[in-house]
Length: 151
Image (cartoon, rainbow, N blue to C red; front, side, top):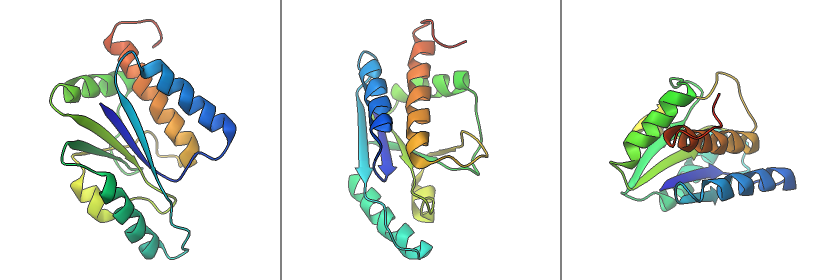
C-alpha cells in the first residue's frame, strides 16, 4: 500500500479533481491512502513544526516505511523511483511519503525516515507537489507493468 501524509488540504477544486483522477488510475495497481493533517497557522516556525509533527506522529504506524520529501535530499529519475517502489512494496506493508507544510518537516520526523527524497531543488506549492508525487507514483506503476505512458 502507498500512503501519502500531507500537511494541509487541497483547497481548489482543480487540485482535488487532479488528485481524484490519479487515485482512480492507481486503483488497479495498489491501495492508496492520502492522509491530510492540519497545517499550523503560527508564524513561529518552531511552534508550527512541533504541532505539525505531533499531528503526523498520530497517523504514523510501525508498518510505515517513511520517506520524507525534502529539498536537500538526493534526487532520482522516474525509472529509479519505479524500481525503488517495486523493491519496497515487496518488503514493507506501507510505503509512506511525507509532504511537510510551509515550514518544512520537523527534524525528529526526518530522523525517523528510512529514506529522504527530493524531486527538485525548486520550491513548489504543497498542493501542486501532491499532484506531482501522485503522477510519479502512477508513472512508476506503468513502468513496472511495461505499459505505455513513460517516454
